[in-house]
Length: 122
Image (cartoon, rainbow, N blue to C red; front, top):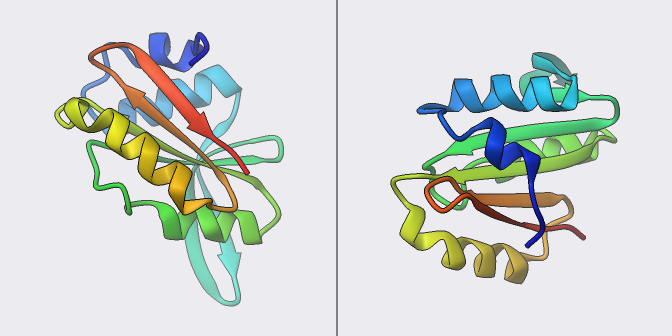
């Protein structure tokens, strides 16, 4: 685990929107960017250069995987960011699971209460 500036940016966030807004500021990205894939429309939480970020707050570990897969298929360096507050005690379980899944995109898990993060990238 290395120092992660996003952890400091989201310290006072209480919802997913705040986290998205802070991530957009940190990455100098755009929020809620619409994309279309084979006639289907999606909305990327944050796009910065060639990176697309899907943010989940106190969500189940499987939440956001589909969106991140679509962003990767579209050619973005895709990120799924899970921020845990209420589920803080499950931090190590989330990290272990994402490592085992060997997903084709990066996943960052943040324990907001402890101010720690870990990431898994292919």
